[in-house]
Length: 427
Ligand SMILES: Nc1ncnc2c1ncn2[C@@H]1O[C@H](COP(=O)(O)OP(=O)(O)O)[C@@H](O)[C@H]1O
Ligand SMILES: [Mg+2]
Image (cartoon, rainbow, N blue to C red; front, side):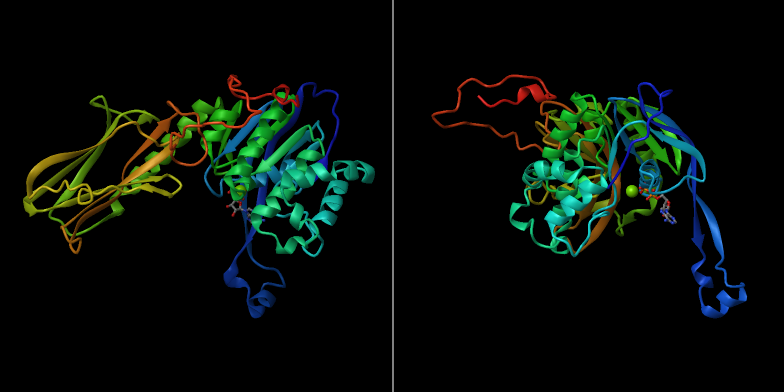
């Protein structure tokens, strides 16, 4: 965590300015690291320059929530480290006009041998808080982190989730006007992530500025005012979350389609030729939570095949399997197939929540000893928000909420999201 605040009177209304930033790393040739070679090269290792960021420019107005997206290794963390002044750009400049707190690498800034308590004081002091101020905030920090029972044990015994909770609790309680967050929330549990998202909404409603790096495009879509896509160290797109994320997802899908050819196994004769995603008999790239969706698997075989078992596996684009229905489990295996045909797998009231998903298909004999065809990424598709407003996880269970208790009002507080701090109250 780091804390900085430089004022610039010319930058009225701008919280953060990134101006033509280039950052290169020296990448040492590992083959030339023997002592003999090291000496032969005059005591210097051979290295190449690697440009992790190239001519990156953008401004973030005060009060904006910006989501930074991009594939692994695209330069997002390097960019945030430059903003936090942990790294110095080789060219260009970064201006910060607000009191900034940054949550970057996991546990950076924590001293492993010290207790959680001592680390809170140490960190908050580094972030510029006075000791009496920290003492006043201490209970809030610990309460937010939910680490009451562990606050006096050394942080080296903490899990990564505990680390993040404590770091986040400190960062938000030192009252920054500009908060930089790099991915780390992914290691917390879902309840804590939800709590953090609530804090972010509160932050934004208070007119503070947020820069958030995340893999979770649906939270950028739902929460951020703007998205910036970093690709191979450059700004590839900068604009509304919907536009930028659509462009990003499309490019990812194309890259995957290009790789499909090499993702086939099995020795035939039956092959899956195509998978369509249909809503009301219309082929779609995008469906919505709650839609009645049909997955149509087209196949082809030059000779008759007896009792073919078809299965479909749906996974998130990040690789987490969601469901894998099979025609054998469904008792829907035809005695034989020949030539061309298709099988429809109809799903009512789709429970997938917004995100990008991929379909793998597999066809085998009844006993599953003989694999006819396995096609990885036979099809990818997007789910957009529909009849559920859940954003965490992969599916909605469509739960029903029922309250009991003498002091619980029967009336439901009816307010559209996002919440504001005015919503909280002790009556
Ligand atoms: N200290 C470093 N030395 C050399 N290369 C680095 C260093 N830090 C990052 N890189 C490289 O820079 C690129 C961008 O990394 P990073 O900013 O961590 O990407 P992201 O956060 O988008 O996954 C990667 O190729 C990474 O290997
Ligand atoms: Mg990173």
